[in-house]
Length: 265
Image 1 (tube, rainbow, N blue to C red):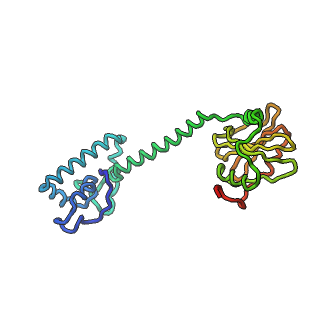
Image 2 (tube, rainbow, N blue to C red):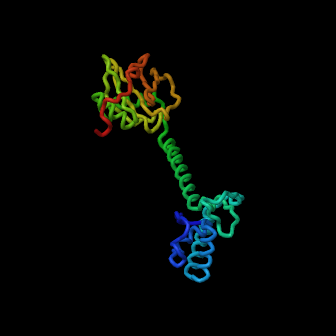
Image 3 (tube, one colour):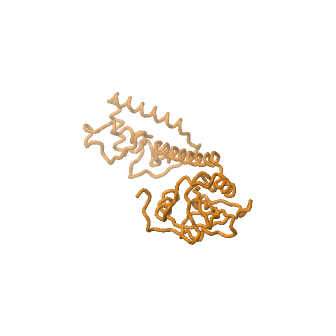
């Protein structure tokens, strides 16, 4: 078992007198030396007190790591063939899986699993801290707040740049008589905390289109409080139009574009 994984081939140094015995500590403890190198190393141990002390320190550290990363009973007894012709010292050609992999690799795997659990936990926390709301309630809040956007939207280029930056896709809305795009509001989590809201008017009627990535889509009401809810997906973006009108007016005009500037340009 080793704390530092070393890449090595054959002889360590070219002649016993020129060998770096301390560099052989880790592969010796891991059982990764050839029979010849292991025998030479053990012979050196008999005449080198400093090397023996270093070996004992290495084994003590290995034992501490094993205590920190418990292994299910019976796993170490699983044997695999030796790698690259190396035969563990004192063994007959078999090697436990855990010793072959190396404890530091197991520690790295544990860290990766822990990181994954942290990401899942953060997402769960976000859902709890920022719960989703009904698109009807969100529409009413925007209207009662004065129908004022936090960021204006004046042309197709700005619209495409904004959607590319925050939703990952450059979208535009085809203009038609009576349509006026007012701007953006991101204060309402209709599908997730990433939901953006497009404020618009159609012949003076206030309409809101909530936009989010398709992976955040969820079941939504179709109507309520005198409002209708329409849904459409374009280029992986879910569009939810809330309007007092009987049909969606803004959704049909959405399309993806590649002719506008990238975010930040």
